[in-house]
Structures are given as structure tokens and as C-alpha cells.
Image 1 (cartoon, one colour):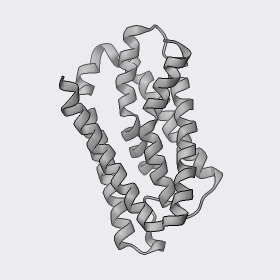
Image 2: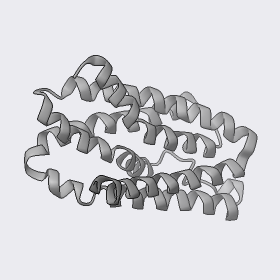
Image 3: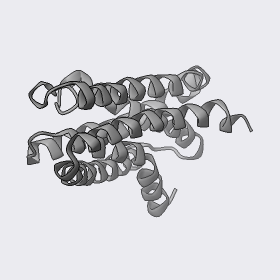
Image 4: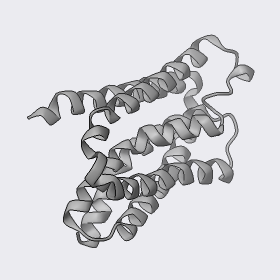
Length: 190
């Protein structure tokens, strides 16, 4: 693959992380460089890790992984999105901690949900090239950059629209999960 093809692949893979990072930016109560770097590193790191893992596991487990990856992504995004909506509707501002935090398990779930499709890309890349480190690194760096921009943009919007923006963010996460599920259950059958 050429540099431009890998870059385009990185941009397309990072769109889920971009949407989620915007949602996280919407729910942040405070904003710092730490938020931008942490979110960017989680998503960029997993977008580097997943194609690498997919590349090395491609020959043994590709069919098994493809049979349930979309359910994992859907479930995680649905639960996190529903929780964001619940927090926006029913909790006082000082009680909103889950969706606006950078807690390890929350970030882990979001990073897995947004990068699970990169696992399948790693499997595909194993069939067309011999090395994965450079493509995976470029995909990870692209996702890091786009996620950092997303959380910054989300905070800008969230400051103006507060809980309405957080509800919209939760809805976006749920719809993203539904999109992933529909693509894998119906569109990939053709």
C-alpha cells in the first residue's frame, strides 16, 4: 500500500474515534491539555494496536473474531451513550462524573469499541503486505490527531450548549453502535 492509501485508511478508521472524542469533549466539565492528550493516546494507541494484533492473528482467528466484533462495539457504545443521556437528564452537574472522566475502564471500553474494526483491517493487511508496523503507526498517529481535534471541538460546542449537547453526544454514540451492527449484520452479507 502507498503512503496515501495508508493515510486514507487511517482517516476512515479514525472517524468512530472522532465522533466519540467529540462526545467526550461535550461532557467535560474542565478542559486541559491532559484531556486532549489522554483521549488522543487511548484512541490512537488502540488504532495502532488493533491492526497489529489482527495482522498477527489473521491466519488462526479471523473468522471467529469477525463473528462477534460488531456485537461488542454495539454493546459498549450503546451502554456508554445511554449513560450519557441518563446523566444529562437526571443527575445534577456535580454528580456527572462517568462520562466526563478519563477513568481507565471507561477509556478502555471506548477505545476497544472505536477500534475493533481496525482488527479486521489488520487481518486484511496481512493478505496484501509483509509488514504492519509502519501502516499501524500511521493509522495510530492519524487517529491521535483526529481524536485530539474532536475532543477540543466537542468542548467548544459543549460550553455553549451544555446538557443538550451531552444528550446529543449520547444519541450519537448509540447511533454509531447501531450503524456498526447494521453494517456487519446486513451490509456485509452481500
